[in-house]
Length: 631
Image (cartoon, rainbow, N blue to C red; front, top):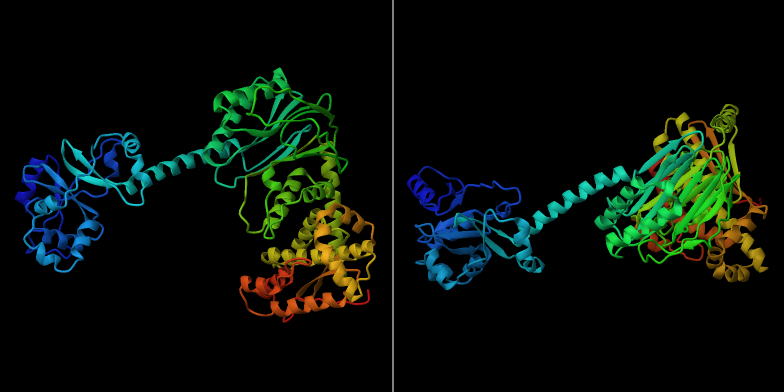
């Protein structure tokens, strides 16, 4: 064997190693397989793709090769080399074994050499030198990459056999390059578009959130001080996702940060649009909002390029912004006449803007995240710092979508022209201390701490969670917060829905206690209230109906009650009793869903899921009870 190797080394002009039979002993000889030594000196050389470097001599008996391949199941191809070093061709394992699967194949081919086999079954794959560039070769053979069958290619070094690779090897290599590019793009983009950012000065405070649906995406924002009394704010949404959208984000970063903003906002947007069209030939467009905050004049100059998702908050109330001054998206045409609006922005005012990924996200029921949730948080949290408000919005959004994957990138920006910071912090501290004092007093006196609401806004939900966390900290059970918070929210939303049902029946002149009226009212309740939710919430506020969430430490137990001031009617009692019964069983969620689905008010999963969550964390034999009284 050593003599053969020495001869092959000199003839083939490559280093060669023997391939031994599994379980090799010193008496084992004449094993037919040889293997070239790996030698890839060039970074992008096609030789990097070689996955098989095995070969046999042409005078090897075919049966010896078949047996050797049976010993080595990972070998896909074998080169055939003559003693003078010339390449006769390549044998594909799958084809050879397909032939030998037929009856009497071993007998028929018992005297065949591999060279004589090749005469009957010739295969001379495309051949490339080991030094050729991978991308040059991939361009030549690109049509092979779309085939369901593997294609094979021969690699030589100094015109001698080196090995083979197949189309799958090339695809794996290219996929690896893509992953590396993807990782680099992600690294760059996370520096350009931070997932969370907070900036605080005496004249300007901002908080941002940006979450990509993929690891990289097309949302972009920037906030920068352009001189001693002006800030520039931009939020953009690039059409599409992935690498191309990320490329546009990088372009936006470079342009916005290098631009001479002294030329004015209108000139900036016009130049950005022109550069975008020249660079990307109209293949990409961008919606966006571009703002200059002039501290000295207390003005916001706004150019809206097909964006529209923004709100001005003055004294804790949403103020309408002129929606007629909207322009078409960037990157479509250079023939534009930009419309700009200028609005007052005084101390204490806040501004919120978001990409449509936030508002177009669906939940389990196929509903989109409602803008009213954001409005409620913004209005209910007027004394909270804006970073806390950003947390509230993000938490409410994640609670809404639950485990549904993001449909699109989600980015929002919240900024304000703050009151004197010491005054604001003092007000927040005063509110927090007051609430903490009330909770501590309730615990000391053994009385419940109660939160009363009519509409159960996202802001209220966040306050409920903060209160729950304080109680769980006392009993050292904070790990249960997520489960219990879900249950409280579910019960409170059910209570709000029940209250709204009464408002709906009153509007329709129906008596909810009468069977015929109940059935008639329920036929349109869900659809009509969903389509006019804002009006019904306002009516609910003025209806005298309310919800109380009550917390009480009772011995070793935390007792949480969700109460509304109406009496259940008989159909409601029956539904709830049925769902509590289902919730007491051990079933999969899919089985539960099929059993409880009831679309007159909702899917009906809430009570059952609440039962299951509470059973997981409570030792109480009845962790959930639902009762009614005349009140």
